[in-house]
Structure formats: structure tokens, C-alpha cells
Amino acid sequence: MNIQYLKPILFFIPLAVVQLVIVPLISISNIAPNLVFVLIAYFTLRHGQIYGTILGFILGFLLDIISGGLIGAFMFSFTVSSFVVGYFYGENKIDINLSTYFLLFILFICGSINSFLFAVVSSSNSNLSLFFMMLEEGILPGLYTALFGLPIVIFHPKEGI
Image (tube, rainbow, N blue to C red; front, side, top):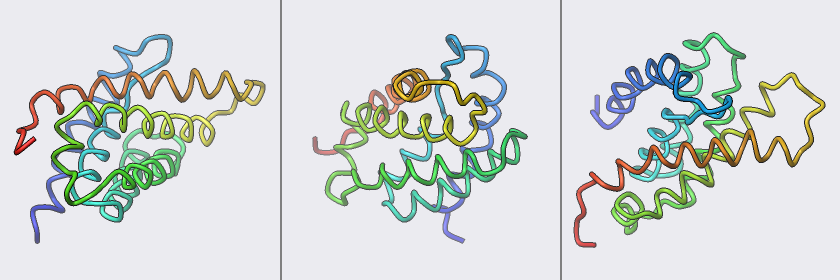
């Protein structure tokens, strides 16, 4: 078996524990980052759109099972948002996407899509306005998620940039 397919699962296990145990403690007014999505976006930008979409589906399903929430909510949001991340993939742009601050932009845009889709699928409060839901359930968690991509930009080896 190729280690390329096993590596995301090995990173997912501790990140899922951190996401479910520690991240709720650092959330600000129920606005929390999604560390598992940062992992999925990283591997999508490294290996391509189809790989990332399948990875988003699998890790979303596993996170749905582990979290005990609505089955399919993480799976749907991770699949769609990793598909969008895949549009930024290019064989010639792997180092540029992962070593520059453009990664934070990608994480912000796609993290906002991820958070908004998760909120739409899992929310039971139907009296929220669309603008409020996009802001509080989409854009703000997307910003918070993008901040957790900063260590990747800082510590990723820069090759020929």
C-alpha cells in the first residue's frame, strides 16, 4: 500500500481528537476553527482535486462517526469544499500554494464555504437571516480556520520560490 494514502489518516486521528476536545475550548462565541479541514486542504493542494474530494468524503464520514453528530454533515461539507480547493491545484503551483500567504486566502474562501455548508445542513434554527448565517456561520469561522494555516506557510520548506 502506498504511504501517500495512509499519511492523511495518521494525521487525522490526533487532529480529530484535538478538534473535538480542545477546539471547543478556544472557540469565540461558538465560532471555532476546523483543523481537519486544514489537513484536507493541504493534501488536496498537494495531490489534486480528485484525491482531495475523496479524502474529504472519507475523513468527513469518519469525523461524523467519531463526533456523534448528524451523519453526513461533515462528509457533505468536506467533500464540496475540498472539491473547491482542488480548483487551486496545479502541478507547477504546489510549492507556491503551500509556501506563500495565498494558502491563507484559499483556506479562508474554502473554509467559509465548508463552515456555511455544515451550518446549513446541521442547523435546526430556521429563523436566521441568510446574511447573518453567512457572516456568523461562514465567514468568521473561515477566518479563524485560515489562521491555523499560518504554521504551514511559515514552516513549509520553500523550494525555488
